[in-house]
Length: 407
Image 1 (cartoon, helix red, strand yellow):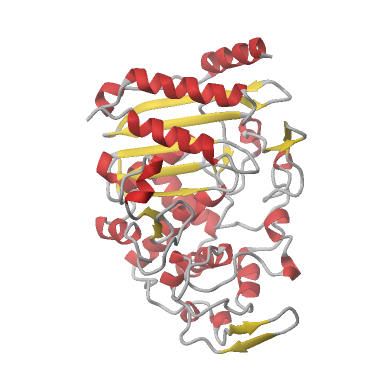
Image 2 (spheres, rainbow, N blue to C red):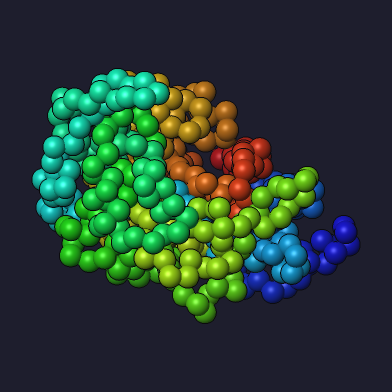
């Protein structure tokens, strides 16, 4: 087994498109970067994950781009640097940037009540109390705002209601129809008073972009973000020609890796979302490490990349500030707060992972993770496709990345 893995890893290196790395320009230690590669290879060989793509870019220079393990275990297809992943909730900050672009054009305001743009939210109610059999509904103290949606403090539920619970698997309703249903669900708490990670709230942001821009959400991303940034492999609905590059989703079954099936978010990955019409602003994006680092470098550059300005420096600053300082642990990682669709490392406890205070980041349900660390002028990408936590593998990469910085 070890020999087969080694041969596959060598084949991956030979097949991968040439990528020029420059650790010296990035101010990173080449020996320690090699140690990252070796450790990630160990995780793949141990069967912790099927395969991994890792990328580090610092001072605008590519320091590391490595692929190890298998894209498809059963077919013995090597993982490649240009393998395409379902990045799941890493989609959310892309949706947030789309919203901020509409704010900059004067089409939305962050403090606008959502009902101002989406009338279906008028009259929304809030749960005052509930038991196993009953719910008492009252009018909320104020309507939810766009900022509430972006910080996950709106009180909107985490996922679709029971009547359309299959939506995130089957993707069988258009975004506008789904959001109209979300609007009829009562809030879990008074807007702004608590933090609750809300996929329905982020979906609503995508619908706001559609209404403000006059474009379908997926078309807005293509025309206004991906094309200007040169993100050529980023798609909500993956083109058929690129499907062979998609990594299957794996889970652990009887102590071994096995392909996940139809119960996965987005449905069976090997069916490529055939017939899907839900654009999923909260989770539906496919992408690659090379594409994602272009998006992160734009944020690190305060809104611009290669002469193309996507956001103003002011908007980047607003998005990446901690907007939930009074709400403890308002995020997934320890000592995190939330900005506008970005999780933000808040205090020293959060730096134990290797992130700096003020670093902003987001992960995805299938183990993917990306971050921007302005204090270190660093952007990083970690891509796997695994249903179930592999935070130990991710955190090893984060800590080793920090340790490879020389200055």
